[in-house]
Image 1 (tube, helix red, strand yellow):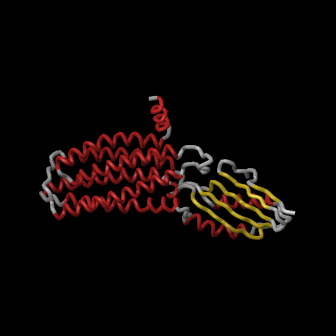
Image 2 (tube, one colour):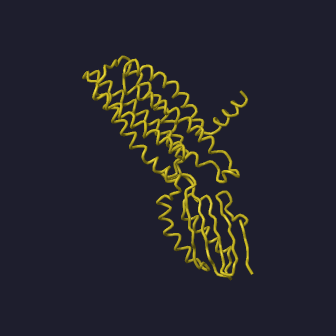
Image 3 (cartoon, helix red, strand yellow):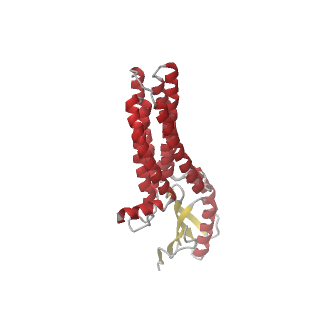
Length: 329
């Protein structure tokens, strides 16, 4: 119990992990209710929603683990820390949703070709309760997510929490689909409304998750966002215009996660130039123009053989001691 208590304390000590943990418990409880009534009433919408809820619980578990793990400090093995695990979690959740959408469409197509008998008794009540449960999750996650990232643009969102939020949104849409199809079935007596609603909801889920997959995949592939690429088109020519800079090479900028960027730059300057002045000007210029710059390593060389490399980090706005500094004679 002592070890479990320490884990629980870590989970409850962070807003993101606390939200995921509470909703995971709520989701697990209601998943069993949906599955029982889905089998009893023979509703594809309710059964598929319960199956999706099961994958939601897996996704919430992954998101919970990622949220806790991302706060682990950097070490010799993971020198940049574990923050990118949240991006990996968001990507995994996105793939989960894609597979679930495809599964629902396949099952719905079979139901359309061979409509089953359905018992709508209490189906509307169970679906409505599921809708309320998911509304609670949407409000909690969207409120916390907006509050935590209100100062950032759309690309500053936490991919892990975004993936969890999309799972909850998909569940909400599923509950809405079941409610609407149940009302139509009771009114007109045609069970085909159930798979049609499922196909419609699956399509919405599929389309809504594509941006998350693309964004998280770009980060995992170290692909710089278009905003940074456009900023570099302005910044790099200005670096060349700094007094004493002869040339620059190896300008590499890549996302560390959805909120921060890491960069390296190789400069060649004149033998008589002050490398500290030039490095300061370069750091200031890049910092002003590149949003979310976490670390910038500038390597400076002189034709006479002097070479040095210093890094500017987010936590230390001043240059740290040189990684190496040599001079050839």
